[in-house]
Length: 162
Image (cartoon, rainbow, N blue to C red):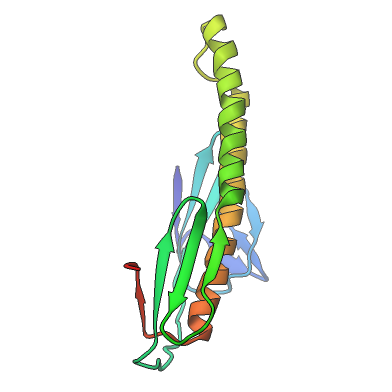
C-alpha cells in the first residue's frame, strides 16, 4: 500500500498529479481539500482511495419526524416513518444473486483446484474482485436512494429499532 500526503499529491485542471517517481496522473472531480491518497493493491488491479475534507451545510429539521430503518437479507432495507408516507422497501435479491453466482463459481473452482493440489489462482482472485465491484456498485446506489428519501422528508431522527 502506498500513502501520499496532500504535500506530495496536487490537483491541477481536474487531474490528480503524483510525484515524478510514480509517474501517474488520474482524472478527478475533487478540486481542493485533499488530505491523503492511498493506492491499494487488490487481486489483479489497484484501488485508489482519496481522503478529502468537504464542508456540509446543516439543515434545520422538524423535531416530530422520525424514520426507522430495518436491514435484512430478503429485503435489503425497509424504511418506515411516523408521518404517514408509504414505507420504502429495497429488495435484496440483486445482492443475493451476486453472492449465489460467486459461491457457485468458487465452489466449482475449489473442486478443481483440490484435485490439482492448488489453493488459489488468478482466476479465483478475479472472480472475487468482480463480485466486490458489483456489490460496491449496487450497495451505494441503494444507500443513495434511502438517504435521499430520508433527507427529502426532513426526518430529525433515524432509528434502527422497528
